[in-house]
Length: 281
Image 1: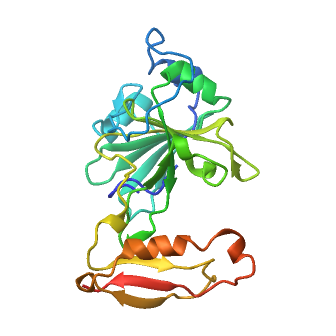
Image 2 (image 1 turned 60 degrees about the vertical axis):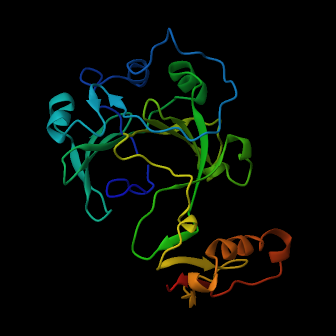
C-alpha cells in the first residue's frame, strides 16, 4: 500500500468516459501516450531488476503533480465522488463511462495520487503494440511481517522468472518509465496472464508502489509475524509470544520455518490458533 494515498492494493479500478465526444476511446487513450515509431511489437525477454517509477500522464494530467482543479478543467465535473476508506486520506472523482475512469485525489495536497481505468476488449498483445516490450512482470505478495496499525507497501515477492501456477493470480505488468501498471482479468476466480486487460493504473514517482524489501528485513520493536503452520483457524486470536533482538531471536528465521508447512504434509493436519511473534525490544 501506499503511504497515505495508495490504498491498498490497491487497488485497483477504471471507469470509461461518459461520451465519445468529450472522452477518448480505449484505443485513443493508449495511442495518446505512446510513440508508435519507437515501440517494438515483439514480446521479448525482459530484465528482472526493479526499476524506479516515473509519473504517468493522462490526457495532459500529470499524476503526482496536477491538482483537483486541473482535473475538473480537463475532464469536467465527475458523475460522483467516491470516499476512499484509507484513513480518509483520498477521494475519487468517478467519471464512469465504458472504461470506468476514476481519478484519485489526495485530500491534504489536492494533488492527483493515481488514476484508474477498467478498459474493455484490450489484450496483452494490444498493450505491447502500444507501449512496447520494455515492461516488467511482477508478482505482488503480502508481506509476512507487519507493525500493528500501520500499512506497508505491496511486497514484490518475485519477478517473471518465477511466475507459475501458484502465484499467477497476482501478476502485474508494469511500464514504470510511463507510470503504468496493468492487471488482467481472472477466469473462474483464477488469474490468467494472457486474458483480457482488467485494469490500468496510472501512478507517479511521488506515490510509487512496490518494494523488494520486506519489513522482516528491518528489525524493530513491535515488528510482528503470525505463524500458522498449515493454516490458522478462522475467528481465533493468535497467542502472543515476545521475541528479543538482544537475545539473538530472528523473525526472518521464524518466517522461513513456517513456510515449510505446505503441501502433502498438511493433508491430515488441522488448523491452529497461530502464534503471533512480536519483537518486544
